[in-house]
Length: 416
Image 1 (cartoon, rainbow, N blue to C red):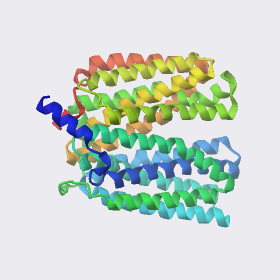
Image 2: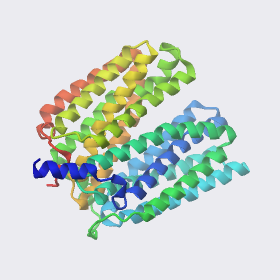
Image 3: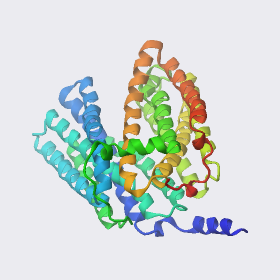
Image 4: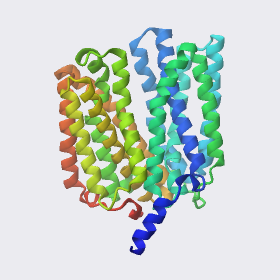
């Protein structure tokens, strides 16, 4: 056995949870994600109960997205100039106060729909600062050799929260929205404890004056780092075009005729596929052709989208969505490693902010694109066109970003 192979085997045998600070990070991130999922369910139900307006539900997403859009570049600059752990602690503390206000206001009956919008917008602004910092923690906690497994473990726990959270939120809302908000408050308190217990390694950040060049430094860096730019933009267009999940209510009601129970199965399927793939990646390394694997996963994502689009069988539809979720998590993991390991620490906040903006935009605009196209050509044609578009984009990106296609092992990625 060669020295390199022996080293890889030793790393693979190292229990991840024995790595310093990784366990509190995973606890904090998972419970924060769980609280967000429960909060989304409770806010949606409560807003609709208060207003009886479908349009009011759309304003919830807008209230969260606009603050992020306006603050994301400033937040990335702040993340690179200050103590990231302290920023997350401050953001989570304010979120706890806001959630406690929602719980108390709902219990006493004075919480109005306008107050909910204000608090949701506040949470969106806080996440704009919290997420670029939180995304840098794994690279500051584990070695590059442990990065793929640690990222996969983190993703699997996140997907578990995405599956369990809506179910818990729906069940607890039957007791009362105040109970949901109280649970979110408790989960965020434990998440805050995990953040406080972390001790990520990072050199003292250098302070530079605020300028357009420094605030938008993440974009300038990505223009130089073509493989990272290619990975982020590939994910943007894949999600933008392949937004089949926006059509799930239509498929459940009009095409598959499964009703609310079937809709729950369809919504859970991508997260279940992603969870299973995350567990597999945590145990089995991706190898030395990560670029080709990433492009293959995007093509599989597109094919699975097409199969779902033409399927009239519930079992086939659920399986295709699970494959879609499994393929997506491979792309997410490789992109995350590129963003974190391929970026100097002093730039990680700003580059993570751009990455976060791309992810948020692709999810929001993907749903909008699917809805608009579906209204023009029908839901099935819209989903199939989106899947075909994803495959075409993958082919174009291979030609436009050859360095991404040639990407080797994740643990060999270095800043340049």
